[in-house]
Image 1: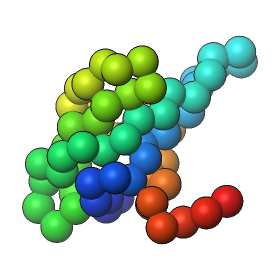
Image 2 (image 1 turned 135 degrees about the horizontal axis):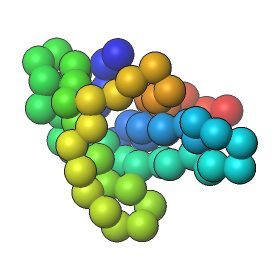
Image 3 (image 1 turned 135 degrees about the vertical axis):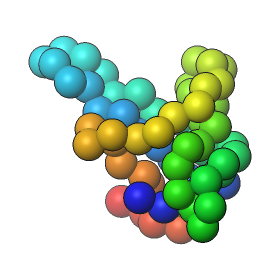
Length: 64
């Protein structure tokens, strides 16, 4: 999993009714775009994330 500053990190809900948690990657701490990432979530909270299997990176130049 590789990311750059400005990409979105999406942590999918693990149980029914749990919403996805979306944040913007504000710093890449690993080499060559690898985790961990410093992420600022929609509620303003910032934290370090090492993404797991329930996480995806949405690159800023990708539109859905």
